[in-house]
Each structure stands twice: as structure tokens, then as C-alpha cells.
Image 1 (cartoon, one colour):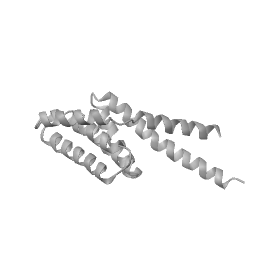
Image 2 (tube, helix red, strand yellow; image 1 turned 90 degrees about the vertical axis):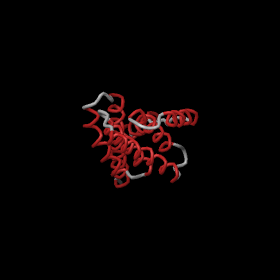
Image 3 (tube, helix red, strand yellow; image 1 turned 45 degrees about the vertical axis):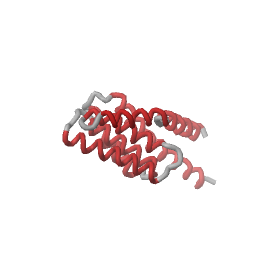
Amino acid sequence: MRMLLVMLAMTIAHAAATQPTNRQQADSLTQILKQISKGPGRLEPLLRLADYHAFKPGENKIDFDSANACVEEAARINKSNPVAGADGRILLTQAFIYREKGDEANGRKAVEQAIPLLEKSAYRYCLGKAYFELSGYYSRQALTTSIQKLEVSP
């Protein structure tokens, strides 16, 4: 029972740590993107906007499409004007989108690919978020296993 409570607390902490950008901040990011027409200066606003769309309440397909469009544009920009560590940040954002869509297998794979890239970069905050995201997969797996054991027990 104690382990179940610990897992529940970890799940709540995970949800609190991934709070989305609010609507006002998203509007500001959109204005920034209008001012910066091209180049690597668009990367972070695009990725923050992708986070906003991915974590927006309601899980609508259009929100995930918007999030994916932001990530794809960030990847294109980074391919033509590489920024150290941006590949890891892009993969981490993609991992968030996968998880929010319920695709845990691809989400876990993306975060596992992002971690080594972020370890080599200056994105320490994102590295912490990546490890925290990865821990959520282990927590959910352990919680599911514990529940299954409880269901089997007489």
C-alpha cells in the first residue's frame, strides 16, 4: 500500500512539473515568431509553443497537429542552422507530444534519445526535465505491475 501511495505522489509531481504555458504566454510567443522571420532565434519560441499546444487541456487533434508543426519547423531550422543541443530539446518536445497523445512507446524512445544529446549541451534544465519524463515511464510501469500483482493476490 505504501508503494502505491509513493507511485501516486510521483505521478502527481510529474503532472505538476509539466504545467503548460498559458494562453497569454502563447500569444506572446506567436508575436515573437512574427518578429523573427527566420533563423535559430525561432527555435525556443517554436518549442515552447509546441509545449503549449501539446499540454493544452482537451487533447484535440488540431492541438497535436499544431504542436507537431512547431516541432517540424524547429527541426528544419536546426538542420539548416545547427544550434548545439537543440536536437535534444526537439526530441524532448516530441517525447512530450507522444506521451500526451498516449503513445508511450515512442515517447519513451524519444526521451531516451534526447538524454545523451542534452547531456552534451548547455540545456541543463531540459536535461532535468528529460530525466524526470523518463522516470514517469518507470513509475507508470511499476504502478501497473503493482496493481496487476494486487489483482492476482487472493
